[in-house]
Amino acid sequence: MIIGGGPAGNTAATYAARLGAEVTMVERDVIGGAAHLWDCIPSKTMISTGGAMSFSRRIGGMGLEQSDVAVDAEGLTHRIETIKSKLSQGTTQLLSSQGVRLVMGTARMVGPHQVEISDLDGVRVVEADAVLVATGSRPRIPAWCHPDHERILTTRDCYPPSIFPDSITVVGSGVTGVEFVHMFSSFGAQVTLVVSRQQVLPAKDPEVAAVLEEDFLRRGVRLLKGARATAIEREGAEVVVRCDDGRVVRSTHAVLAIGSVPNTDSLNLESAGVALDEGGYITIGRHCQSNVPHIYAAGDVSGKLPLSSVAAMQGRKVAEHVMGLQRVAHRHLDYDKAASAIFTEPEIADVGLAEAEAFAVGRKIRVTKVPFSATPKALINNDPRGFVKIISDPATGVVLGGSIVGRHAAELISVIALAVTANLKVSDIVESLLVHPALSEALAEAAE
Image 1: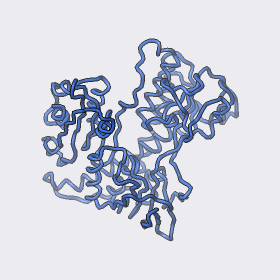
Image 2: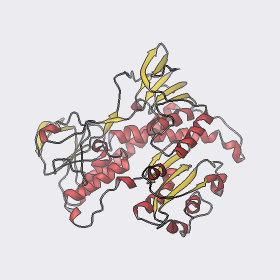
Image 3: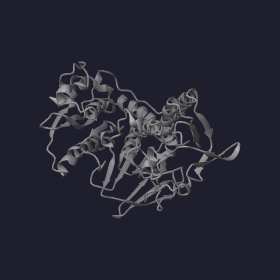
Image 4: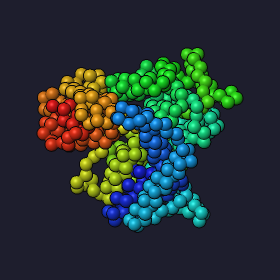
């Protein structure tokens, strides 16, 4: 029994069915996952469109005449809905082709092996040998904010917003927050970012954050550093954000981007004896098992990295474990080797050991860095921003991690991610015959 049809649930369902399991999957919103299809895919679609608008403003440097491009709100909405529909339909067809029983409804535990399902056919209890909880998360809304979904927005009110804002205050300078800054500034809004620390992306490499901050300032983004929002209120046609240091920001809209909370509160997990941590996440072990061995958790509810790629891999590992494959060939999931990306402009991607993390524990590392401005393809693209940084073991040459800031960073990081996962050496990257001219040449140069 799988509760939740997002990346974790549908991947687990597909693999378990292929391995011979009888699989039932219950989803209350949309096959493909609400967080995935209501957050990730729409936001990246809008970022892509906004990026095209930003690029149109730079074409003067490519031997073309400058032209003005305006957003077509109706066309953008249609584009987002079309992509979401295609992805959901594709996932549904794949699951059905594997013999997975799909139920549109809700589910909750009523015993260690008993799952109560509610759908259009009524309420019934199903016995399951194993249960995977993969119900995802929802935007976190603090007590001091009351979104009206018109001008005070949650992240899910923005794909696209009913009205494109003239000005907007983004509260939260993590991954989601900076993506919103990039997105709305690309569409021409005056953006203010409330930064509770002294740099955006406080968990990232300071050099990475510095490149992004420089781009934000170039765009005219206002950064309020060292400020923590304590209230968001409407005053007529304005939204007022008040900070703990007394600063006040006025704009036409504000959006909360301060994280998420797990969807575990309605699952009645206590009836099955499943333990939650203080944040409401299901605590899991090496095989994504909860404290009740036959009940698993994957995706955002597991409290691990909130990435679709991680959720999908967790789902695969759960299917393998349920079907006994851990006794044969079964590679354990290493969260420290998960690649991640931030779809700002320039893009940011990293994987493995971070430079600051290594220095914090006194680990000796070799750090090599190459700017894209030295790469012919970056100059051809009229976008030399950013760099490639590779971290390796000075004694063995094994690649330990890396960061990329620049165009197509999310694609390029795959090379470093493969090297980290497979314990390849920098010499393996150097001796690969890569394409010229291509941005990937910077990888080989950084590995030199």
